[in-house]
Length: 236
Image (cartoon, rainbow, N blue to C red; front, side):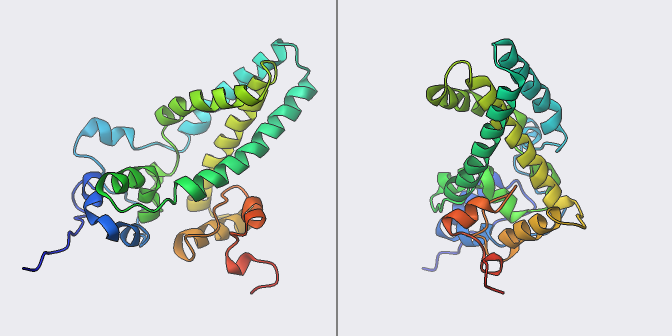
């Protein structure tokens, strides 16, 4: 008896279909469909609404939070210069977090139903439909939930007086990351460094998907040896 392989129906909600691909999921999800019209994820309208986010929601919601945190840090007795330095350190640390999440979590290989489903929601959908403008930035609700463990992580390593500015710098780094990511997909930069970053990131989507994990910079790709071949010094 021949068992027919499962086929994803792109005209139906996708989230609870993709898990059935099992071992074939990784190959399927890394064959991009270039269309500005994103697929439907869920049959439920509320769940579907929660998966869609306008890019401007990220700076609109989180930049006031960043400003509040910086003001709080100054009111705690830190000088403006100290807050700026701690914020810059937080932003720098964010670039490593950005790289690490993208490489080790977003690109984890899955092959079972529920792991495939979770991966598709987390990042697989972006690789399958890279031009879906409503699923390029992280939903604010999810970001708010993740702020709690990240705050506690910063607080574990930092002092009570430096935690707010460091966290605020990391949050500002996240906002810059999400806005940059959207621009690299839908903007038309004509000069470097934006033009280089767009070429660099689209190479990750359409040429070598297991390299080039940096979004806002290629620094950590250079450090950890994941620069795409054409971006490696000395190679054409």
